[in-house]
Image (cartoon, rainbow over all chains, first blue to last red; front, side, top):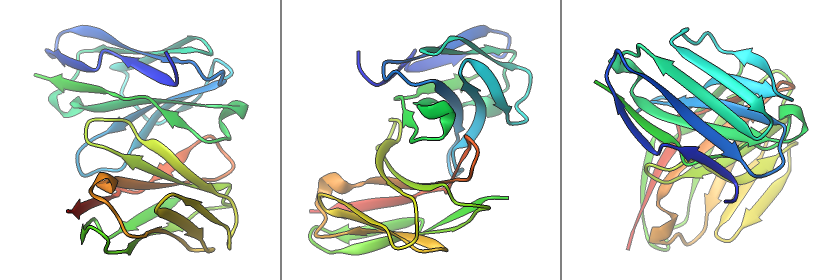
Amino acid sequence: ETGVTQTPRHLVMGMTNKKSLKCEQHLGHNAMYWYKQSAKKPLELMFVYSLEERVENNSVPSRFSPECPNSSHLFLHLHTLQPEDSALYLCASSSQGGKETQYFGPGTRLLVL
Amino acid sequence: EDQVTQSPEALRLQEGESSSLNCSYTVSGLRGLFWYRQDPGKGPEFLFTLYSAGEEKEKERLKATLTKKESFLHITAPKPEDSATYLCAVQDGSEKLVFGKGTKLTVNP
């Protein structure tokens, strides 16, 4: 595997479900990010982890919970989501503690019913 | 607050018809301006980083330029495979990227 990978690529869940999105980077970077991309809106930064510590929490509802166990892996735990949370969730990584170019994964397309 | 505005929202070109996409920005201390290409259902693919006014970068049919207020992505003699959404983003001294809404480019054969 090369670059940034995300699983699953597609996810359908009910509002009472609990699921997790996984991101793995193979670039030797030390910063990782979660973004949300909705139709007709710019990419919205959700969370930033730099050197495995959360440095940004962009006023995201608590039904989204990130976890960064090491510099190569990032998770987004989802519970009791709302239909308006349906979107493309993108993971990215960068080097130098987050001050260099960010490289994105393919995204997880999430549909909340 | 950092802001990025891209225009036009959508652009249709004939194959071979050159044009430019615009990215206007306001940022407190520009550290970098980034261009990405995004195909439907996929993540953004990095194209260029520009760091200071007057800087230019080229890759195949694409050329990015930067002034103190805006950046242009010039597309010379585009091909249908250049069809995608092109995203512009700025970074100040933090880890945050602020993105524009993108320009959807369609190149017809």
